[in-house]
Length: 187
Image (cartoon, rainbow, N blue to C red):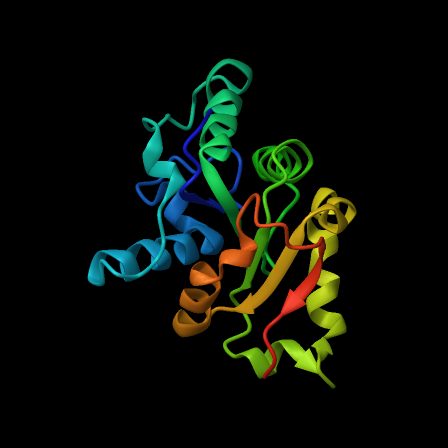
């Protein structure tokens, strides 16, 4: 049985990576993930436990079926939830589809969706509900749109304090008993 204490960060990275020295850092969604890591590095009390650090790193050119896919799944099995960065540049890549499909449909992991292009709770909402522009982003990854009804999903802006609050929220971890639904913090 896996010890599920990690937060699995899911984000779009161009496939294959550019051979430039920037690598994955050339993709904005990867930079948002690095922001979480930076916050954790600057403040050890920031409640982000990076599941990507639980297994050894793999190289961009590694074999999908024998190395990359099994490593993603191992990390997800050691996670209590998924932190999904969803932006206008998020693309339906093979790796992201696998992460979300396996994480939700096999592991039943709740998802905290971070919208990097929205800086406040208020910016996500209209009349207390998620804006249509936010909901439209779900179609960037059809497996997420089709699967999210199976787990609780918490939708938050790219705001350190709101993300910290969501990471502390014990209702958005596997086994919490929280009903599958779309949740957001009131503005």
